[in-house]
Length: 208
Image (cartoon, rainbow, N blue to C red; front, top):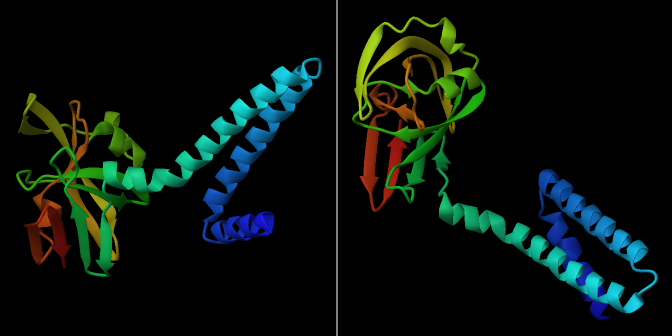
């Protein structure tokens, strides 16, 4: 009876999982089977010691599965995610670093930004420029920008498609920073496209 109830609970949990989650769980099961099999082979001559090792590995395996199940909740608290309320509104909680972080799809590739209302432009790091198909070495760094690290050169570019939630914009001007950046900045050339930008109760809301 207990096994039947446990089996039903496991099946119900699996039904709620995505394909990626099922694949990852399958990997963990196979890994546990491989570890258990190797323990059996190595411990055939000492069954008592083998049983102890098997129990230890079983506990480790259960802990890994438990951690996997809790990871989504943990990561949500450590790094709050943006929420698409509808096709014209996006909300994002303030991060633990005090900044608001938004992930936009730029020319088909996801790029993580720090929202910076003090920046007049979208400023891409060289790493993010490369990610969306721009070769920083071919750009003309004709612009100048004052940053916390001093004066840096910038190169103008045009982003063919910028997508945030259900909102798509095309041919958005931006610059690539010629210096080092921890993260790309989402400035007013993009934020200014919104009808309402509101920060209240630790949440940033963009509405078109």
